[in-house]
Image 1 (tube, rainbow, N blue to C red):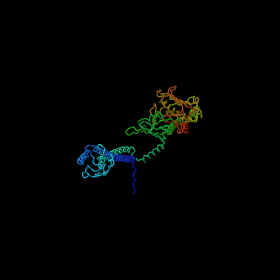
Image 2 (image 1 turned 120 degrees about the vertical axis):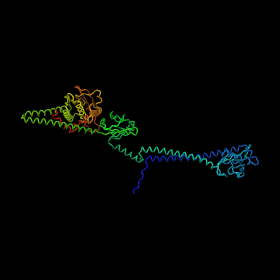
Image 3 (image 1 turned 180 degrees about the vertical axis):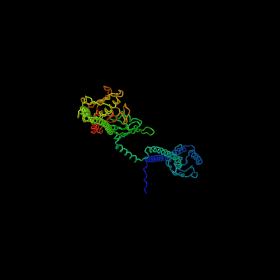
Image 4 (image 1 turned 90 degrees about the vertical axis):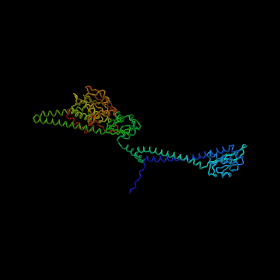
Length: 571
C-alpha cells in the first residue's frame, strides 16, 4: 500500500502561517508587557494612595487632640472607619509610639501590637512597605504623628491589601486580553485576505515550485531560437530572449526601454506599438525578413503585449527560387510549344519539297536566339547577371513585354568585389525588372530597358519602363514594405522594392526613382565598389526577387542553366 506523501504547503499558506504566528507572538508579548506594567503601576498607585491617607490622618488636628484623651480609641476608631470608607483603603491604624493600636478594622485587634516595621517612622521618616499583617499581605504606609514641638506622639499606618490590588489588575488585564484577541482576529483576517490574493497570483504553488518554474523559464528563453519579446502596459521592454536580441539587432540591456527607443524600422515599430493583435506580418530590418505576431495580455485591463519573431530570410530566399523555377518552367513550356510549331513548319516545308525554305526558316530562328544571347553576354559578361537578364527576357516576352539591355551597358566578369556578392545584385536587379515588367505590361509599347555599368568607383544599375510611372506624392513610399498601387495577389505585394532598399542600404548604396524620358518610371541604384560592406555573418544567402520575393534564378547553377535554356528563341 502506497502511503500518500503530503504536498508541501503553498507559498501563500506558508506566509499565512508565518504571519499568524508572528501576530500571535507580538500580541502575546504586548499583553504580557502590559500586564507587568499595569501590576507595577497598580502597586505604585496603591502605595501613593496609602501614603496620602496616612499623611492626612497624621496632620489632622482632631487626631492630635484625641491622642491626649484618656481613651483615644473612643474618638479615633469612628474617625478611622470613616476615613477608610471615604478613601477606599483597607485599613487605617492609629497607634502610640510603642506600636499599641488605638484603631483597627477588627475591634478585637485594638490594644494589640502593630505587626510591621515602625523604626523609620519613630525617627521621623514616613515610609512604605509590603507586609503580611492580620488582614493578610498589604501595601502600607507608616507616618509619624508630631505635636507642635516636633515630638512623636503617635503613628499612623494606612494600607491596601495585595488582593485588592490584584483585583484591580485583573480587571485591566481582562480588558487588555479582549483588545489583544480583537487585534489577533483582525490581523488573522487581514493576513488571510492578503494571502488569498497572493494565492490567486501564484496559482497555489509553493516556493520550491515557483523557483523551479523560474529556472525552467530562464532555460526556455535561452533555448528557443525564435525571438520572444514581452512589453508592459506602457510598451516598455519587460523581457527579451537571446533570439529576440539577435533578430532585432539590439545590443546591450534594453529591458525597461520603450520600443520607440530601440531604433527599429518605422513599420516594425508601429506593429509592436499597435493595440490590436498582428498575425504573421512580414517586416524587414536592415538584414532580415521577419514574421511578427503580437498578442495583447489583458486581465480586465491592458497589461502588455507578447511578441514572437520568426526569421524567414532563408525561407523567403527558397520561395524566390521556387517562384523563379516556376517561371522558367512556364517559359520552357511555351518555348516547347513554339518549337513544336516551328518543327511542324519545317517538316511541312520538306514534305512540300521546299528544302531550301525549310533550312532558311530554321537557321533564321537559331540566328535570332543566338543574336539575343550574344547581345546580353557582350554587354554584361558577369555570368550570374547575364543568366538573370536572359531568363528575365524570356519571362518578359511571355508577358508581352520587350526587355532590352541598353547600348551603354558594360559589366565585365570579375569586376565585382568580394564584399558585393552577385546574389545581392540578383536581388536588386531581379526585383527592379519584375516591378518594371508589371508596370509596363498592358501599355501601348510595353518595354523595359536595363542599364548595368560602372561609373568611377560605383556600380550603376538602372531600370526604366513604359508604364504609368510613379506619382511624385508616392515617391518616398514605394520602397516601404506593403506599399503597392496594384491589387494584392495571392502572395501579397509591396515586398520586392522593400527588399531592394534593404540590400542597397546594407551595402551603403543609394536608391532613387524618377520619371523616365519616354514616360514611365526609372529606378536607379548606385553601389560603391571600393568600400562595399560585407553582409552580416548570420545572414543566410539571399536570392530574393519579384514583389513576391522571386528573381533568384541567377543565384544557382540550376537557375543559370534554366535561364539560358529559356532564352533560346525568346523573340
